[in-house]
Structure formats: structure tokens, C-alpha cells
Amino acid sequence: MSDAETMTETAPETAPRAETAALSLRAIERQYVQGDSTLEILRGVNFDVFPGQSVALMAPSGTGKSTLLHVAGLLEHPDSGEVFVRGTATAELPDQERTRIRRTQIGFVYQFHHLLPEFSALENVMMPQMIRGLGKGEAAKRAGELLGYLGLGERLTHRPSELSGGEQQRVAIARAVANAPAVLLADEPTGNLDPKTSDHVFETLTQLVRASGFAAVVATHNMDLAARMDRRVTLRDGQVVELD
Ligand code: ADP
Ligand code: MG
Image (cartoon, rainbow, N blue to C red):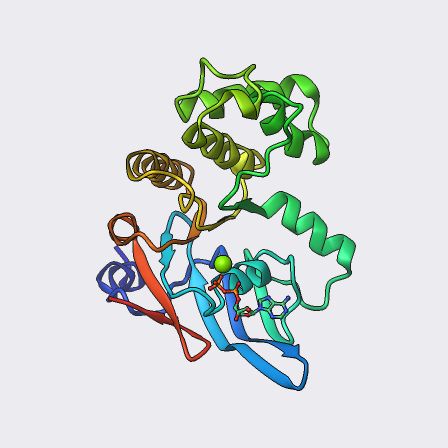
């Protein structure tokens, strides 16, 4: 074994990783102007998430969790700073290219599922794949596999209104990862569910992260659920801070 390999193996957890981060935020600033006052929400956020890693984002309401996820997911531009997705700098890219990266590299799960009501579970999960250009047959195959993996194999033809809250969220998770994104961003995905259901949804989500190797950032208020993730961070004075 070479020296370099030995060093990598014995390097402490805090050492910079050679691996490219799935998501990397650098010096992100975001403020909102409200009348004559300015709310400085993100004030120089630096944050890296690596493939296969799950991170719980735990901070009180109004501190900027959703803002952070929107910026990280290229839904909003920061006022300054850079968002790297798999090493690609995105700030200066044309909108069309940002949209392409968002569709192929980033999956979103929200507190409310936002599934299309007139489509089945299977079709909801096929949709992002077909938008990306995949054929119907292939999209259906992958959608069926994913839903099966999430325990919804018997619910493929159900519409969202014919599913329980927990099932709807699992379909939303399947849809978010259907294109095998680099990063899954979830904004209080179990905030609307009872404890037992949210436990189940969370379990599915963490299993999927481990099995698929994408990175996940999950905003949550649930300490038990956060304890099961690889890392816990909070927002303090507009910056991301590790909790343990
Ligand atoms: P969290 O998700 O942690 O509850 P948000 O990111 O939604 O926090 O919001 C952070 C702060 O920014 C809040 O005080 C909110 O009122 C404010 N805010 C969020 N979006 C906007 C907006 N579009 N315009 C003005 N203020 C906003
Ligand atoms: Mg929020």
C-alpha cells in the first residue's frame, strides 16, 4: 500500500475530503428587503454534503431553512456566493442550464406532497423521468421498482387522494429520486404526519440514501429522526454550524 493510501485511511473525520462534494455552498448570502428594513437570512453559509451522507438541518422557524434549501436547489439565486453541484459552479450559468441541473441532479420533497392529483402513483414517479427524455417503458419500469422498494408495490395505480399521508410522502420521495439525483433536499417532509407514520417515512428515506449513494439534506424539527442521520447542523447567525 502506498503512503498516500495509508494517509487517507487514517485521516481524521475533519480532514478535507478528496472526494467531490455532492453539494457545496460557499459564502452564500441571502437577504430579503421588507419595506425599509432588511432581513439578512443567510450570512456567509459554507456547507458541504458528500455522496451517501444524510444531514439533518435543525433550526427554529424563520431562521432560513427553506431559504437555504431553495438556494441549494437552484430555485433561488443567492445575493452572493456560489453553489456547486457535483463540483459544477452554478451562479453564472444561464437559467436553462440551472434548470437542467435542477431536473437531473436535485430532488425535492416538501411538507405537502405536491403530487399531481389526476395521475396515479406510478405516473407521478414516471413524470420527471419523461421530462428528462426517458421513454415511457423505461420510466415505468424504474418507477415501479422505486415504489416497490418504498413498500408501495400494491399502490401503483392509486391516485394521491386514494393514498394515506405517509404513502403520499413516500410517492413524493420516489418522485424526487426518480432521476437518481446527486442531492435530495427535503423541507420538513414529515412535518404533516403523525409520529408513527413519520418514523416510517423517515426510515424509508434514510435507507434509500444508504442504498443509492446520493446526498440528503432534510430540514426537520424531530430530534429522534435527526439522531438517525449522519450529521446534524443548525443555522446560527445566518451560518450553518455543526451540532455534534
Ligand atoms: P424557515 O424555513 O427556517 O422557517 P424561511 O427560510 O422560510 O425560514 O424564512 C426565513 C426568514 O425570511 C423568515 O423571517 C421569513 O419571513 C423571511 N422570508 C422568507 N421568504 C421571504 C420572501 N420571499 N420575502 C421576504 N421575506 C422572506
Ligand atoms: Mg421552512
